[in-house]
Length: 373
Image 1 (cartoon, one colour):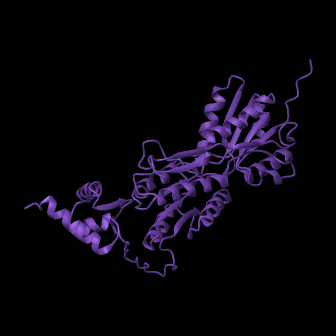
Image 2 (image 1 turned 180 degrees about the horizontal axis):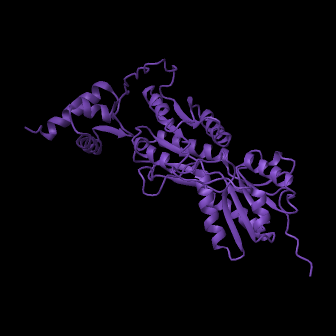
Image 3 (image 1 turned 30 degrees about the horizontal axis):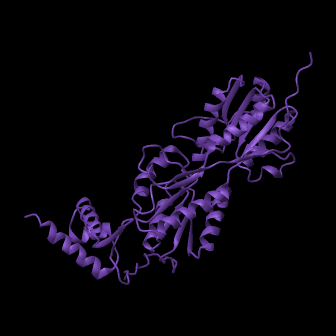
């Protein structure tokens, strides 16, 4: 016989008042109730003012809240993560480390305790790091997954959408309509960054432009798509191409066979006078290779780098699109703290924030000389 609704809800209230704070998933399992039914009951009880609901946790109304301590997982979890904010970023990623620094600065200024977790380069490495942080009792998550391919990105959508603490994605914009479409995120408007680069080169008279870019991150894929759209739509651009920036800038999508061309030969062969190079290290190496093949920057080919992490340090200081990396982290941290400081349902709609990059003009671009008549 099906249990009466009133009886089931009394059991829910009894457990919540005894424990102080209980995960919705754990409560459903303990009471032998389906997750859908349990969430519906919790929603009705919260609407009636009998308990508080939010981000996968149910709490009693009023009084001093008693929370059950979360035991450290097996394997020797570092102590003191309970109540902290977890920051999860991939290893060896200088671009995202500046974003991490921005987030850390904002969180420390607010007196928040931070636990940093570095995900190895292996596919799917973020998930175990997040699960360990959740088991240790963190109350919020800032994460920038590596997502080397679209397939790897899609594989993370399911579990990441079910994280039961407030979560903000940093410098990532999930596929429209995916399980993460409605997750808070803060990222750079990379379309605008490519617009700045192409517009700058076009304004200097360049009509034949090549993009040499990586293909192993969401940023790289956004840059490639934006360049194809923008260059293809500009009537001033007579010829354009998108190529891989180096043999190690992939792997790209599973099954793809994109190879990095000889950029100097491509510039010579198709008469490109402008180039956008992503990211900075690849850009500096490509400029060196151009010089070794007799192509002088900017006299023969103007170059715009994309990232501006080390673009200014080359023998020729590179003009560069500069994403607001630190501001991305700060904005993500502030959004997360806003979510944590207010009861669920009172902080407004999901926010998908985009910050505009800038263009730092240096010595690697110049006006294209007009041919003599």
